[in-house]
Amino acid sequence: MTPPEARARFRGGLRVPTAGLCPGWTQANLLAVPRAYAYDLLLFAQRNPRPCPVLDVGDEGAVRTSIFPGDLRTDLPGYVVYEDGVAVAELSDVTPFWRADLVPFLFGCSFTFEDALLRAGVPVRHQETGSNVPMYRTGLLCREAGALSGPLVVSMRPVPAALVATAVRVTSRYPAVHGAPVHVGEPEQLGIRDLKAPDFGDPVEIRPGEVPVFWACGVTTQAAVMASGVRFAIGHAPGHMAITDARDADYVVP
Figure 1 (spheres, rainbow, N blue to C red):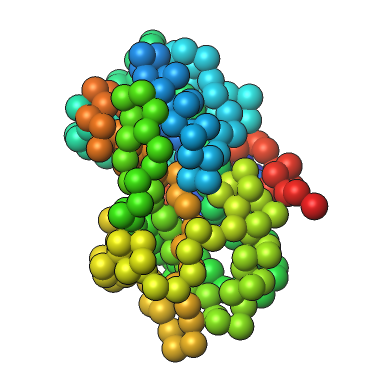
Figure 2 (cartoon, helix red, strand yellow):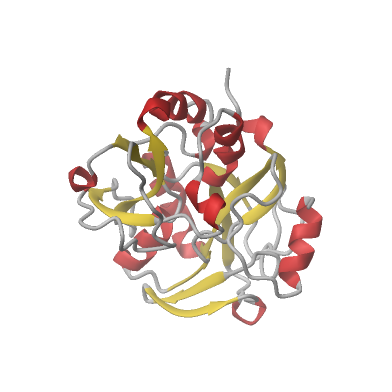
């Protein structure tokens, strides 16, 4: 599918994780916050660039951005609506909730570098099984910014031990979509107690000879919304991303 075709199918009601869809096209995390929180979110992203790399910011009240020409209210496969930091609804269309004072942010997503991992011979388990990537709150706190604070969230992919260096090398070339892993190996060092119980997404099998590898995750911004009790916000359902018209190649560094 092309990005416009994918967005049309989501608008029509298709609800699936977007990993593996539209290879070569950049995927992004969505978080729309009232203007009163927009500067704090921008500052939070600047202070925490690994989990929160800003790809685009729309105008107040906008329903599209320069890299997402679709409708941010309908053209993702899933959304979460927050009130006072609590998820109050999970929907496929947030048009009734979209407000004129909302400022939409698009942050980099690690799904963008998965095609490069596959081409380098690194398996991507959640794509193999048709499930969502597992994501975990860690015990590491992000730098605060204004009203926003919260934990680092990471995504995890099992990687054969012999290919860990390859995974690091490949993903380090994509700093705008989280870049190299933040940790390899022991989840306990991140404060993660049970890999079989992710906070978001689905658990995946770690096979003999594989190592859990952790990348910073854009759901960190939604964890900050929850931890900070933000009065109102709309985000993508974790793993159900905005598929943009930007190319993966736009974010590769030599």
